[in-house]
Image 1: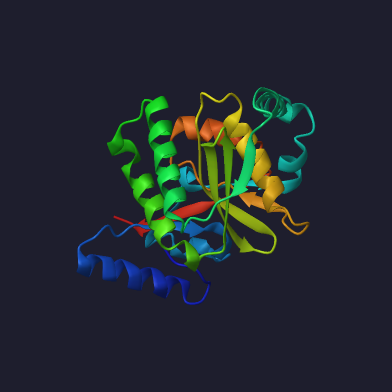
Image 2: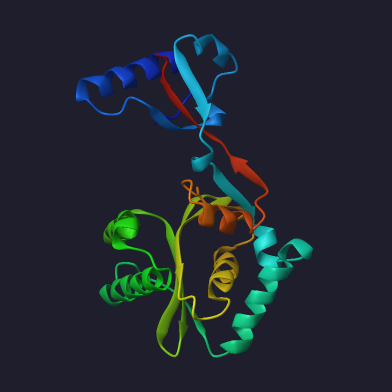
Amino acid sequence: SFIGRNKFAETIESLINYAKVKKINTTLRLIPKSILPKNISILSNKYVIEKDPDNFDYIMSINDLLSLRGNKFKTKLKWVNTFKKMYPEHEVKELDLGNKNIQKEIIKLFNRWEKLGNKKRNETIRELKAIKKLMRYSKEFKLKNIGVYHEGKLVCFSINEIVHKNFYMAHFGKADYEYRGSFQYLEYITAHKINDGKIKYMNFEQDMGEQSLRSSKLSWRPIRMLEKYTISERK
């Protein structure tokens, strides 16, 4: 992938040629719509430029997440209230990803989430590795990590990054689904803990073509999508 608008055609050619030399996939991915030149059609003879819906980012309104007002959030609010009612003694804490005990709790909950979802390790291994890597280098990023505890047990967590004064990215979120409403409450309370009066949006990232994940993200009523494209040589 690449960012920036300068020498767009030259950048495409350079990257594809480099990929050929390295004998790796020559298709460029995750190209944001915002950097595509207005005269993109002049490249169509040489390159195939296509939308990549599996990698569109879901953008949520922070005000929607804070209030959950209206019929479109009626079910979400119901689950949030269910969690509050069933587990009134729960605790919400900010997590230090550099803490070894916190790391163990997160991995333990990840394994629990994997088991409850009947997922196989080969389906989750990439995400697990990414979480471990992020924990290892957590001090290099401006992270805001939220954990919800019940009777001393971590039942859900979210790992988020403040990437701009106006928005944050929700990198990872996991919940023990045996706690009713835990995932809905996690998103709700994360927005409240991150909000400082300046945050306007939350980037819920992409669904990677997983239908269940797509349905889940759409149920939060995104206000728009950030489109991504692929660019490849025309045969």
